[in-house]
Length: 336
Image (tube, rainbow, N blue to C red; front, side, top):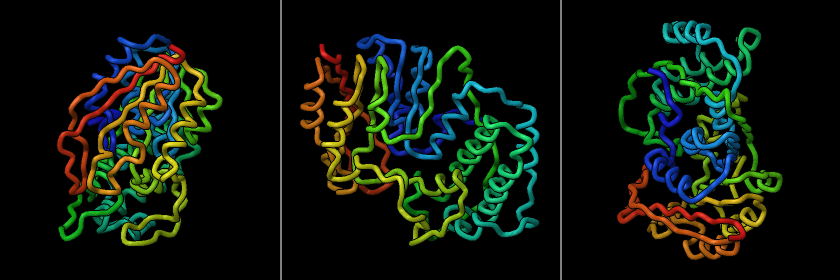
């Protein structure tokens, strides 16, 4: 198989809602440029490709930046070369490989011991191929490794913990992602703090879907971040996380003011905001830092606002009850 951009587990993914959101944007917004400023999986960027000419994709995770470059960057790559490398990776015998960073830290925890060894070997070898592959091919190989690793991971969909008390089977297979044809599009990919990025952005439509609760994405997906950067840091605690970095203000008590600053910084014609009602959650970690009334008040100050809602089963890897969950879309015509 080959992976499409939505073929990974990601908290807050809009894949199941993307058709609905895109239709709302098409019906209520006009413009040729679209910015996905908290792009996450990149699903909304992909879903808007046929509706715009200029696409701005931003996220502050290293793994997501590599994934966007692999799927969207309009650069040449040799698919035959990548298929040959894939075949080599899929004929590795874990028992003949030496221990490596991945097997020593993640073996029999986030992955089976053999799978962790193969993942580490592949990641080391992608770096060793630097003189034989171009940047696009390197990004495709790393992104493919991230998708393949996620498919075999011993988790419930994120990396805040691994599943304990069961035998972890070897199931890793290396499959390539399916890059998209963007030859007639202008693609701009960034890894920035969204608020800083917004200060220099000029775009017709800006789509905003920040983290709303206290769960930091750099910690939720630390294993994928570690595989991407491959700096091999010391890991700490039961969940084997590196020292904290890349932490979002949207997951803290400053979230409302941070959101307000973002909205006030935008230079665009339309603002589209995704929001859900997990602010009602009994779990403090799942509860939104910005409440519905605050979102409305901040957005109404920018222009004419419309509100749309849809029942949606929120991805939940824990025990929190998300009954009666809804997704809200706010569309603001700036200055309208």
